[in-house]
Image (tube, rainbow, N blue to C red; front, side):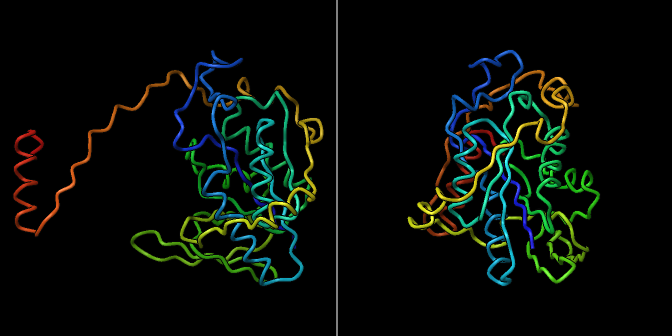
Length: 265
């Protein structure tokens, strides 16, 4: 069985986003060269789920795929250290500024070239949080999509997922090949052992360009994207938090007094 896990190289959540530095200052894309970046946390859950499937079956090959700048090799190294068998880095200057539609086209082409039984993804990336790429990739591949899975079972020719929709728990079964996105309720990701980090350096990491995927450069990137960023506004500073301690009645009275004093109620 061939499992392909789609991962993303994203800015660290604690870092301030930079939009005005670097070569591409005018297009309001994130300056990733000026930021500390890492494997998107939701994608770690997808890698973990792939590892759990592999533990239950002896015939599983796990390949992680990312599309991103040169620094994205660090994200692939992390995924390999977590247990993936091989990695593919789609790297091409023409990809800069690609939105979800262009990204899904490139990822789908990479997955198709690899061959697959099941594609796993995080529900959303931590930088854009759109949650649409898994379904878009499935549409481009012409296979079913089962998104926001809290539990995944893989059979011989189908995959079953369970998701909590708030008002109901839903079980869905789809035939393979398929695309599945997983939530953070699927199971905590493991920490890579030192030995796994060392062994990851010996694993296969291939780099593909748009030419390798037979995608014209004019059909991806900022110019070909269906969405555009017009402006960027920093978030307003958060108000300092108030911690009210003590027994319930007294704490409630102090909280009510604070809210009244600051005209919050």
